[in-house]
View 1: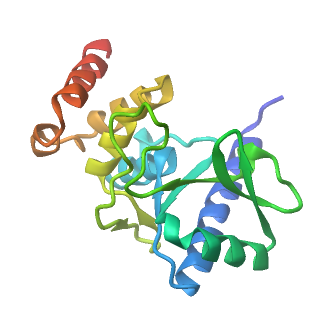
View 2 (view 1 turned 180 degrees about the horizontal axis):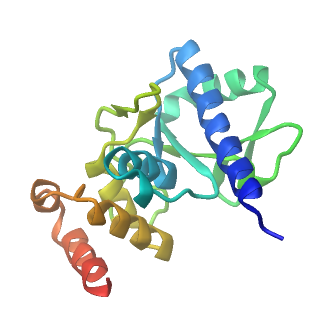
Length: 187
């Protein structure tokens, strides 16, 4: 049976993992930013806490040239590096399931070869706790590029609280503007 306690436990584990990642990368001087659903959560929560919804995993963007240093710092913290099915990830050595892992993507590189755009590398925003997160404009580009159902829902969440501004929309290439229009039309 699913309980509120189980949900609370998942959320705490997710954000504990984010804080651990932040601490070890900052201590090592490795730039990063949280991207994906967790970054969307932070942005939406800051604007309208009751509209924020959690996600199952954590995605972080780093520069590929820092990958070896990230792997070493993670190893010292009790995490392991895995490359599975084309995905780079850091997992807890004691519980290495992919769903509990931190998935790594690389700044200025496409996550998949067929994607329209590479992962943007704008300077990150900072949460009240000091966690570095991708700015909304970067998240919009990433979500519209991957364009899965959960990405569309994340776009709806950002839009519902007014985070997708006319300025952000105007900076999108035509293909991504069309996708944003499709998301809005489906609401």
